[in-house]
Length: 196
Image (spheres, one colour):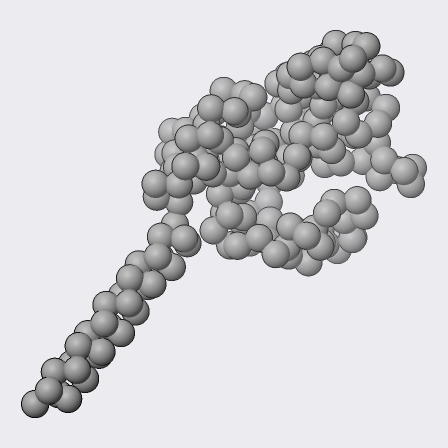
């Protein structure tokens, strides 16, 4: 009888542990209650259009784009509001500026790279369809990030750090995509180098 009670107790503890871990796993794969969302919404450098979008997912996407991946440095031309570059001369004030992001051309691409001819693409939503990055669907966006190839012509993304970003979870990449849908359309400005 005692052994039966121990077996039941052990089985119950195992089942309880399994359920707890399953809940944690589901929680890790969702954005619900994610503190990154609140931070992301507070640091977005542009007014977000949230109508019809998942606010929490947009917030996490903003956190990943603006606090983790640094997409602004390569996809905004110029990256910082004139006089605000944190790097100092030749692009900012002596001692560096406050790093205020250029919201007028935010993520609109146009940053030239070496080798010549490589220019960052516009990530902002198409003004008609609302799809980001040249009117790409989410599936095409995943192809870009996971395989480093443009789905339209197959060229390799030469300077995009896709070999690192491809390891992000589908949930995080969906959050980035949702965030890119929430930002306003913009056109590139004039710059001569990344991080200007």
